Image (cartoon, rainbow, N blue to C red; front, side, top):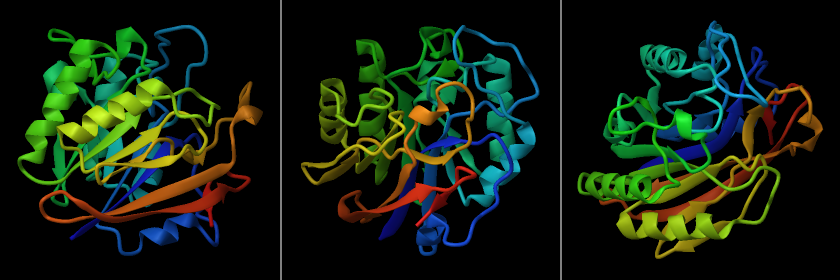
Length: 273
């Protein structure tokens, strides 16, 4: 049996304090911990689009490691904010600290390729990334999950990974600040479950969304933010609730039990029980 934990978005912009009563205490017996990193940690400042562009010190990778993360999803709507080069370098930094960086690649097939950590194959994809951030057959970038071709590639990767054991999918989807699960989230969750996903963990809403069981597969549609330190325009719209999902997987990839440990974000944007 493998106990995996997953959280939502990590909006890391300053060193962590690790408060007393941290929600991270629920990870004590976990075999693998995964979450989505939302901020490009790079010295490069080269905005690739208009609107909100995020940026953080690359030294904060050490704080990510101290969170206890084993797997970091990089497929979302912000990690391409400063281009492919900084994103690739960030992935290399994560790997050097023994955190598996998933959801990107030199081309679309590599971006969706699973990484097996603790006996579980992890795959990350985004349904909400700007088109220029996404990998294609001849361009590096993130794994997409919006267009038909990208979705079919994702489903194929899940099915192939399930042949080797359990598969966990980190999805960036939905609508920010909206608690209701969108129809396209439900449809993709159903198809991922049919393809062989053992568990599905969602982020992007920056608030908690419902949990659903689809044919024995737990789907955590929105796990809010594990860390949230953005303080710019609109920061007051982001909720302070947080959660960590824990799922037991048997050797053939069936989820035998699951639960949600809930908490709140403190004044430094860190999770407490």
